[in-house]
Length: 225
Image (tube, rainbow, N blue to C red; front, side, top):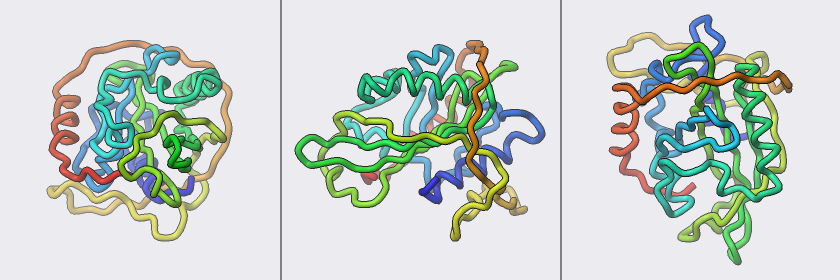
């Protein structure tokens, strides 16, 4: 992972597990990841061949110049990437490991930008992971994104994430909610590959999901990554 905020999200996800394979979506507190919230999203991957955005931060939506809620995550990737992405989502859910995606995104005649996306599996009221909390950010020169939405993305690399190697310098744990006084230490990370198979279940939205939706909607930053 190249972006330090990718490490921040994965570190937060790991602390939420509390001895479980993956945390539940109801454990996510938007206040703890407030500074990256505009780039955060939730995917429902009950059907990994058609993972749907349950919600998405403002800056992530601005990148595609549209509201993403209810749309297919794969629809903005080139067709050649679909099968690989579907397999990666299956493996991530089955192995209870986050996955880091590297891609190049086309902005038409404006050129291309490098994108890093991390997806960390979540349960949603059930025993098995069926959802992802994700973070996506452009790397390097983002000039092509200024006022020009992404037309499509091409997958160029992927790795699964495991907590045994240190994050890059300058990575700090996400800020705690105002009522929390203690400071957690960010976990150590390294990249590995898993090839297990998943099983999925489906459950409905609850009050915590609505709180997360409200938190994303009040984010006023409209900056494009």
